[in-house]
Image (cartoon, rainbow, N blue to C red; front, side, top):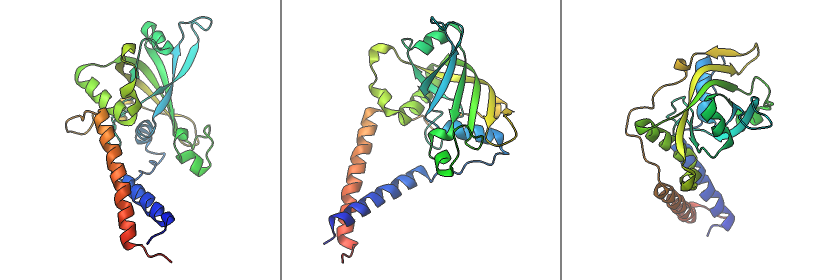
Length: 236
């Protein structure tokens, strides 16, 4: 019979391989010459951004005010290039946006494993980061469904956030894209070159039931991996 350590190892290996297949493999970072593609890549790979607004609150009224927000431009492998957000008017930065919707959004691969694995400091231009200029707009109807699937699929905790906060879906309406991904200074590209509609097909509804089902599938995978181990492993 296999040792407990062997069972654990093969179970974890099976989970890893399954997740790798499900994700279709981690895509490589685009060449720095492909500026628009790099901008879209960074937006899609990152789960949060720093957004700067013009403060309406004392004692910093009229000054830049930066805050962290979860973002998503679509489910993994089906990005739009447009960052969506889940907001409430109770949030201090959203109150700024009600007076002036203009904002700046900064997103960096420093939040992924890429820069650390390559020894790139977050401030290094080799650790690709982008700055988006534009405004924050509430979305409704069909685009709200796209935003919901994008955000709840990558930030499942949002599903259980308090309903009395009157959450709404919004997008960052990009007017300018600044890219720092290599030496030689900042590069700019047009918003049109970095955004696109999601691929065809009905937008999936992401529910708590979907997440529970995923948990059950993961548990069954672990159990099946142990059975396979008992059948095929050879213990010394």
